[in-house]
Picture 1: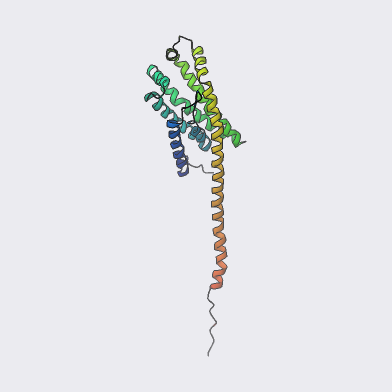
Picture 2 (picture 1 turned 135 degrees about the horizontal axis):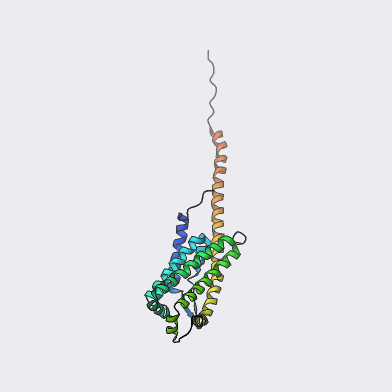
Length: 236
């Protein structure tokens, strides 16, 4: 069976929509303060990229998300801690910002493809949780490698494990909310897309099936309308 190209017209259109959604959520819905916690909706397009397009789609959306995070929080200084780490350890911070969401998108796409063979719904939930877990886990790993800068930012002289615990204590609730948001929204959006695509495919199939029927129905009429030529009389 011939393999469909990744950058088909349909995939490019879907990717464009997800990238636009990612940019909007990254700029306006990645750090919404509410009751002392921060709500982050910017991971949803990464999950959808993994669900719709597999490994490479999830990885591409994750890469774009990481680049946006790096530019907005580190270079532009929107997030004080990230900007501080960028000044102290620019290489590690850059790799952390870009790598965490890229790896999360790749893993989500891979796990979805593997699990969807048995259950698409379960695969959607696994992909949603995977993105949140890897995004936070790799961020904490990067903080451990930048423990000196983290200790300085926190105003303490602690070991790597102590820094890990201190940072996780500060962000654990945000991590839980990220998991909840991804689990609530990403599978639901995926399901809506699947239903819409099924209805569109059925509509096109019905239209294509009705064309031969119309042509076959018109054939007898054409035969009936054919003029009858009377036989010529022999006048000899």
